[in-house]
Length: 262
Image (cartoon, rainbow, N blue to C red; front, side, top):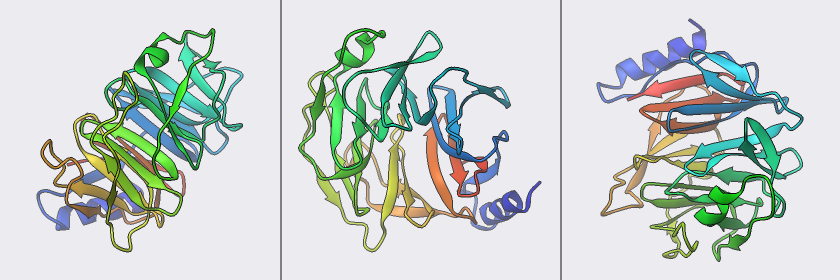
């Protein structure tokens, strides 16, 4: 067991019975990004190589295209290339989707596909996202929101992080029309976020600009934006995270993958 995992487990044990307990995940050399949904886990590394978790081993996704960011969900598996081009996995291969260039994409939520150019948020209606099979084009809807660099949707609406690390939330974005209920600024004090991930079961996690992991407390159907950010001790700085089926997947700045359970 590595010193990193020993430290994380120690933090878990001393902080009470409701702590998150973490352990090393399947080894992937110099990981940078991870995404989990509906039992599937995808990851990318510093070489922009892409992998699918098969049991306890990472299976390399062969093909001419390499993705720096992968997401999977109701509308399929999507990726953003190093040139910010959007791809959808069709027949086991990433197929180019003409049109909008994106730096980040998220397939979470109820049939939603959302993304960011790095400064502006967009939504792709369910009909377009599910119907695309490699031919034709799709039509994105620009969201009249703040300058969002990261965007994620889950059970209780969508979350965004703007270019200076502020967090925003909207109760709902309609997957059929991309209409929204309006964005609310989430006062997080001096805390600045790099990303916020909303899970399909309602949990919401944040990753600060200095690599600390947070859980948004008090999120429920009556208070979809929650109440405050609660730190989950990790011991080392993290660079990316994702949650699915009881497991919080995290990637450290050093490129190590762990998963944590509550």
